[in-house]
Length: 472
Image 1 (cartoon, rainbow, N blue to C red):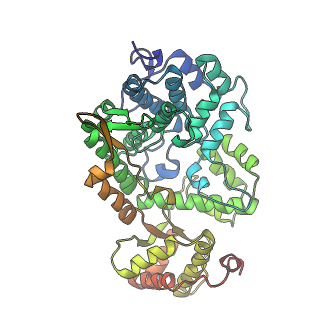
Image 2: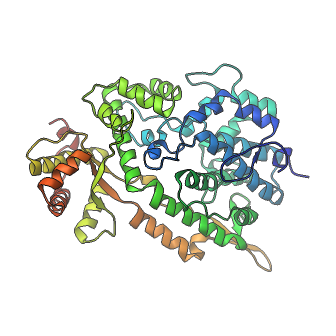
Image 3: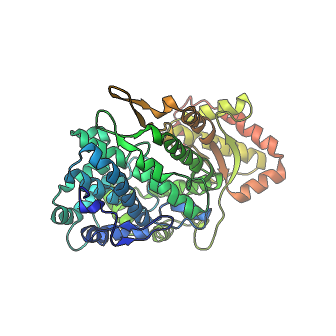
């Protein structure tokens, strides 16, 4: 008999692309049918990436169901071995289903923006407020928190804690174990979205995860407080790490995808700087709209000359005029000048990046003999939170006791991926409006444009206040 009926693999389910049905019991269906979870049908999983990969229109709702299915499979294997109780299992399942309930349109782009009026809301933090139905716009009917209490008899605060906090936050080792099944180097979240995104994007990189082998090898660490794998799952874990690497390299951070993301981030930053809505007002606007409705709302509420209006106009309403690369830098790119330029940009503050953009626009303006619009050039730097690949413990059972060794210490494949991710995948790109690129290359050889941009970057020295220069 399973630990709880929620782990019984047989019964009615929801069919998703690329995998078998996700079994959903009646009490979980009540949560899924709540307005808060149904709202996720209007939030695209990958934001503006459908402008590059047309099939990538799947939603956070689909991923939430998929993550629940992956958590079920993992707990079905781990719970009996780790002596997890029913509350641990139910809390983990509810957290997997609800881990993205706080997502809103273009959340990752907005969360990257820091502004004087206060940071934009983190979707993990919003999840708790939405579960309690304490954030506008509030939905009618019972809150998800009250549904969880009534249907499962568990504390909704524990579900929220699994979503919001790192595994080390939890006091009980069993709960830390469940937390790492949701968020770690080989968690249920990644196991679902890597394959699901690959299917919808039409790429093969994330489809090669050996789920059966990986899930079958899951176990608790010797301390009982984190997810681990047995020796037989080592290659399956390497494959998942490699799939994540290739999905970022060839799909999530494809240069045209990064152009669309950079345009979206700049448009949002321009709006926030100009209108400076309160965090509460911004949250209300975001939670009440789908991706497309939010873009249209921004266009309607921005002056025609603004960066918001012009950038989003190039990405919506039947238009697709995505920015083009004019310079690409990496830590191993070509010569020493390129590498030095990368390091100089990578370590600049946001104000200094803005200041450098002013100088780069001046360089391009000098080459063209005219002034360049403020939003016509964008420096796209890779997210700073992807520098480290989380490792996972590999448990070996000796004659006397079990030992655990981090996968990256056992695998040169994983070591190499960690190095290559930082040196190769994390590129810095300068994007410009397509008409500006055409004008530049018509007037100057590409080598000249490149040399002038590199010279500006290498000679950049923020000796005066970057913030002060922004207003010159």
